[in-house]
Amino acid sequence: MVRLYTFKILSILIILSIFSFVRAFAIEGQRLVNKIVAVIGDEILTLYELEEMAQPFYQTYIPKGISQADQEKLKERIRKEILDQWIEDTLIGLEAKRYGIKVSDEELEEFLKMEAKRQNHLTLSGEEREKLRERLKKIKFVQILVRDKIAIPDEEIKKAYQERIKSHVGVPRYHLEVLLLRRDIPVEELYNALLRGKTFEEIAREKPADVIYFREIFKEEELDQEILAKIRDLRVGEVSSPIFRGETVQIIRVLRIESPTPPSLEELREELYEELFQKRAQEYLEKWIRELRENRLIKIYL
Image (cartoon, rainbow, N blue to C red; front, side, top):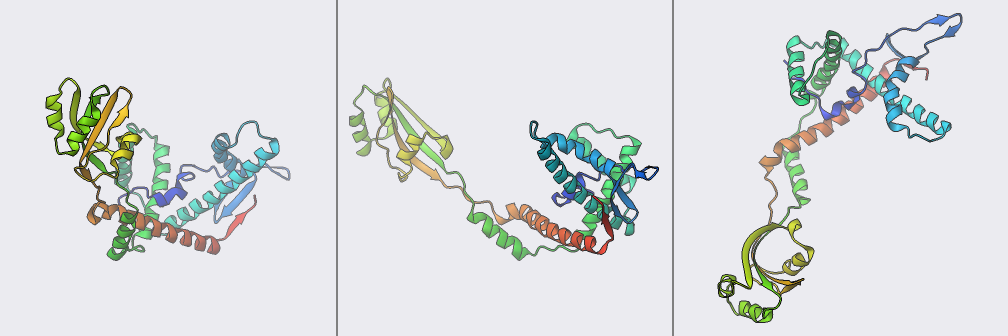
């Protein structure tokens, strides 16, 4: 059984495969009431159906208040894009039918269970279930189509990993100890004592009413820019010059700078494989669809 799930590469199926097309048109005298805009084999798309599909996109993407002429230009673009998607979706559906792709009740139920978890609640009528089954046939066919055509060698994954970690920018973490002093005490005297080797704890014990002492770990983005500018160039063990902030003064010692390391190859292997597979599969599908369009008899009347 083929596990059914939607690849990113299947965006061509998302918009159109949920529609059930009514293949009906009528003629009054010599006038065609429901104009046909495209034909692929025995599949047809009418202007009425195209407009039905386009309506949600008109509402979303056509700004209010623009001129009638600009509205018509945008509508024309939307119709052409939807028509193009319909052609690709229909070609995939016809190929799935030609190869006899089936979606079992078990596969349909498995997909519905996954969707129910994702959406918290999912109830479909019998007709909606059959529409979904048709959509899944197309997804299953594309999965089968690319599954044996795409191979990602380990060397490519290793190369992609090296490229990834080149651009890896981690966030340093600073292990600091801080003296928070009142501004009206002899700050320079205490600072010079620190430079001579006195510890932060010793000063805090000697002047408990005037000094607050603490140790903390900060990510770089958590630090005030003035403080960061003072400590960025300090080496481990060095003490910053006094930082005057309103009624208080801060003196900071760098205890440790934790340089982030990039994730390992094994940590990224699955993600890198997926990225490479999706890219290769997308390229393969685009080429395959181009060839289908060239070899299939497609008539467009729009």
